[in-house]
Amino acid sequence: MSTQRIALVGTGGRALSFVEPIFAKYAAHNQLVAFLDPSPTRMAYYNELIATRWHAAPVPTFAPAQFDEMLRATRPQTVIVCSVDATHHDYIVRALRAGCDVITEKPMTIDAEKCAAILAAQRESGRRVRVAFNYRWGPFRTKVRELLAAGTIGRVQSVNLEYLLDTSHGADYFRRWHSHLAQSGGLLVHKSTHHFDLVNWWLDAIPAQVFAHGSLVYYGKENALARGDERWTRYPRYTGAETGDDPFKLDLRESESFRRLYFDAEKDTGYQRDQNVFRDGIDIYDQMSALVRYRTGQVLNYSLIAYSPREGMRVTFNGDRGRLEYHEFIGSHMNRAVVSSEFKLEQHGSAEAEGEWIRVFPHFQPSYVVAMPAATGPHGGADEVMVEQLFSSAPPTDPWQRSAGHEQGAASILVGIAANRSIQTGSPVTIADLVPLHLGAQHLSELV
Image 1 (tube, rainbow, N blue to C red):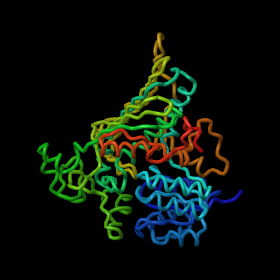
Image 2 (cartoon, rainbow, N blue to C red):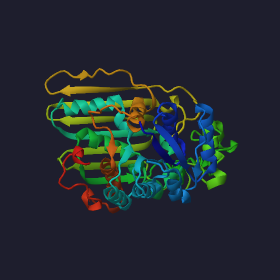
Image 3 (cartoon, rainbow, N blue to C red):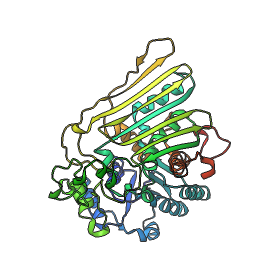
Image 4 (tube, rainbow, N blue to C red):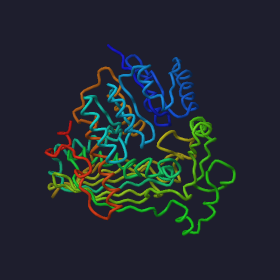
């Protein structure tokens, strides 16, 4: 069996989700041949982890300007992209044109022009692009897909999805580069791409038109001053004794991984991972709503709040034979660790799970809860199943089509991109006017 040669672009916290399985479980059939990142400090930290945890030789390191040189020198077959969202398209397009397949962190990219460039490069090269939508792989979310596909509530006519980010997780997006629209596309692209992809996949439908509203109502200096929280705006970052009892404080030095990946790496790039969430200059929204119409006529009513005291989501599906509700809440921020979407900081308390469940409400019959085993592991057990598909030499057959390609990646981000444009213009946005997705297709499964 041949070995897959892999280059990894971007060595922030999320990269560990790819590095660990390559060395810990799938080393027999995968070889990490290169790291590329603007910070030598971060790459050195990863090489230390590789040496101490898995007793492997260091991986060659490259700067962003050396991307083409890296491809020539290390000859990867697959490039994994975990860099800042706004740079995804550049690495994806160049890797495809060099004859490589690509695995990219979500979102695939952040705007319509970059999305179109990726789709064009894929058509020209014929190479494969996969988007790491780990949300699809969770057992409860797969069960929702199974129940809907079986016609449990008949034909789904509408979906309501409410997602709450709490003042631990949600605030973290406003500390870092994600707080700038030009780098992340805002939460409607960076975060909501997960949610839009889930609904697209659950319905097996292609989004057609979006109307949205969004605003910054909690984070940012102006909002803090309006609430009388002037004391929280006095310092530019959180690492330091002066932050006192600020509930949003984050000291990068309290965590070995955060210190090594971010605090120590500031000398390389100048990037500060712990910026004050109540500073000037934040230009993304913390409160968003979108109405999405699908080509098949179904409608999604979506909302995202990034300053909630609790975290989780509730999704309801209304069908012509009943209703299905999916609930996933992981507790109050008072009982949770200080977390980010990357590495976890040391625990400041135990997470109090509120539970994950699915309940079906058939027409004219009693409702019932769908029996499910307890979900364990990162992202509710999703990561382990997803990386098996990415790195196993013989991945199991997946009847639920959870692997997402370039068209599925585009279908999700284009909802967020269209929502951003709708907010800016005050008008509905037709997705096909941004980037055409196979115009004759009605279902997501028809996209190659």
